[in-house]
Image 1 (tube, rainbow, N blue to C red):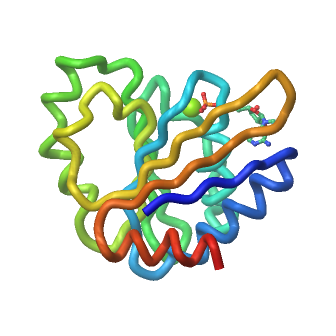
Image 2 (image 1 turned 180 degrees about the vertical axis):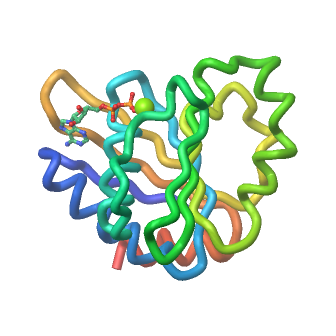
Image 3 (image 1 turned 90 degrees about the vertical axis):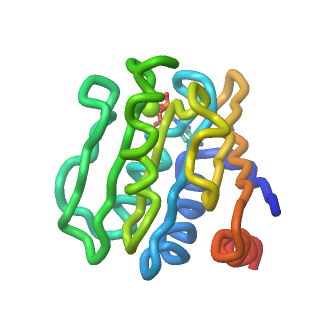
Length: 155
Ligand SMILES: Nc1ncnc2c1ncn2[C@@H]1O[C@H](COP(=O)(O)OP(=O)(O)O)[C@@H](O)[C@H]1O
Ligand SMILES: [Mg+2]
């Protein structure tokens, strides 16, 4: 299933992120984000984290690969695999699989390096943008639980 939203301003993205947070806060989700640098992947994760009530400052994990947050009612993990590239990612695929299981929310930026090897059930978010501040967030779901999340976004 898929659906997309045009977010003209950051406030639109915030509304979308709050809606998404509500849909995943109970049972969790494994989320892959795609899009160029500056598209709005980390911005979306930050806004979801805010909606979940995370108290720590949420920063881009570009240099540390993984940030984790335990101050909300569900644990949140945020990967940025940009620095790993192909070979590096294959070494952590099994570890990533663990982050797709159980009650947690996991965001992965720059997972295109390892497409096909990633956990089966997931939501993919494709972020595209023009020169202005508007962004298109397109959601695709894999797996029944994730189809429900897409339905919830459209509701
Ligand atoms: N409508 C919008 N939605 C999301 N981000 C926006 C929007 N308008 C402006 N921005 C800005 O665009 C930037 C996106 O950067 P970032 O999320 O770090 O990109 P990425 O993680 O995709 O490389 C942020 O500075 C954010 O504030
Ligand atoms: Mg980023």
